[in-house]
Image (cartoon, rainbow, N blue to C red):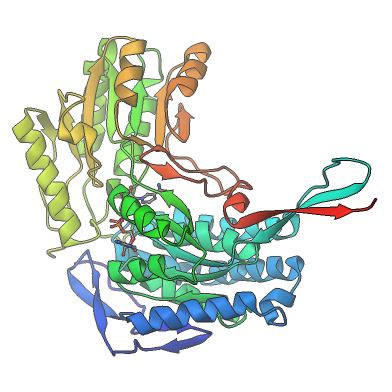
Length: 490
Ligand code: NAD
């Protein structure tokens, strides 16, 4: 039996101009619990008219120079963000449970990793709100020249399903701190925490129209991208959709930032701490069920320690069974949807056909007598770097292990991939550690650890993992325009 939830999940409405409303054509879709396949609730599916109204509400809230949002100080904006953080902290158990019900991730992750970081991100940008500044630049004696940093305007924030509220916070907190207004579209698989967040943001004092939430599928996102009154699209999702968005945004020359897919190399040298590296490899691929953009899905192991390493890795992996997501002891939950599970199982079949060695896992398993979307932690050995399972993003608990002999060979193989989101290196040699961090083409490189993040440290991709950085002070560059002022004082 799976743990029963005490939460009643109400049907989700759209948030437009500070009011909760059904969609204009009355349509809705099901939100499904991936651990059971059961419908959790109905979610309003925004129609064309709803997207248009939400963008216009955001536009008015931004443009009205006498409006509330334009008149409040940076300090007050910071206070509202801080209040949002306080309210998330107050409701942290409820939000974590909603996230787990909707996404299938272990409650341990939602409660102790995702939600605390959401709180941190809002507090970080609450502090940033009063530190957005231009500069004075001395050009000559007869001019007073300076720059102003101004909000971009209406931001369309489009989010995937793997870290629903966390990835939303990476966009909403800096966008609001900089004084923008927002239309937020969560992923259709995971709308519940987005809607609850909307209630919290209203309670914290965001004026009407500053944050609008439109739930629905890809069409809703596409309408936002096309809308002429949206100034910027902040997108996290797949590389394929990122490319479509870039093309669509070209017509109106919208600003865009794209946080896309990954196939990150995790590289173990023979002189690394092998026990720590085994833990890092497991964390790298099985955390978040492997539905993680920076998952360490390509594991390169020095041939000198390969057999010893594999024995330890497989032993630990076999102890990891998929379990009830609401059980605090569970470390591997349910994949987000039947579709995603089938994609993952398809890649497992492809790996077998390509001749890789299925060392452990590989099957769908029932949990608690339910037909949820659970897949065993899976490891392939004897993988060649050009196999599909080594090159394509699987987005599930499937690890491809590749042996290597020397440093140049592993650098070349690690970089030989269209993605460049993250990478990791395990070594005790400090010279090699620095050399690797310079040579790996990735937005984040971890040394002797995997997956650590902080609200203050920028995150984003090289190559087809996208562009623009989220988190940290650099995010401000993507949510502001830079204006130069030249004042003649001759
Ligand atoms: P997806 O690209 O299918 O969808 C992401 C969002 O875009 C959803 O809200 C979806 O409804 C919307 N969308 C789909 N088509 C659209 C279109 N044509 N126009 C506008 N919006 C559209 O991605 P997904 O399956 O939800 O998420 C998994 C992907 O996200 C993986 O590739 C993963 O690597 C990536 N991801 C990247 C990061 C990062 O920070 N780089 C973080 C998390 C996830």
